[in-house]
Amino acid sequence: MVAELLIGLLGGIVAGLLGVGGGALFVPALVLGAGLSQLHAEATSLLAIIPVALVGTWRQQARGNAELRTGLTLGALAAGGVVVGAAVANVVPQRALQVGFALFLLAIAGSLARRALTGSDRAPGRP
Image (cartoon, rainbow, N blue to C red; front, side, top):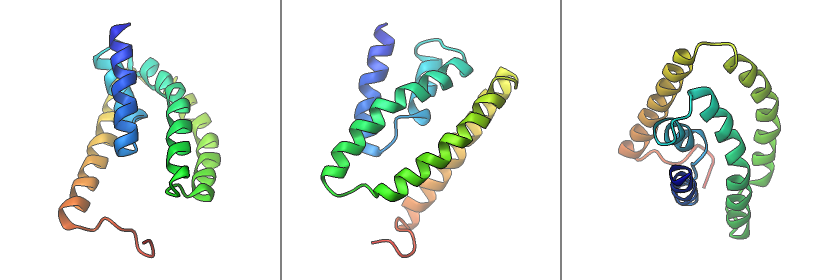
């Protein structure tokens, strides 16, 4: 229970600071810190994202930082995609989920590092 409390608290801090806290943080923390299987960590992370996203959006929207239309569009499309993803996650081997998740994190980390090092932090047409 202590591990889960720490994961939740730190996840909230990182989510508010960096805009992450879902899968990128909660899944590894739940696997390594709380001893959950990859599948259980992924499913638990999906549930944990709800309050994190609601509070984070509320705070950022109050400051005019959230693009509501884009966020709602992404959310609606992702809701359909998660049905497919969850179904696949329940039939593939645990090891495949672990390797796939690790490769996903490495790809995201590499992309973010490249953007930070080259200074290309703005998307075309965005302020």
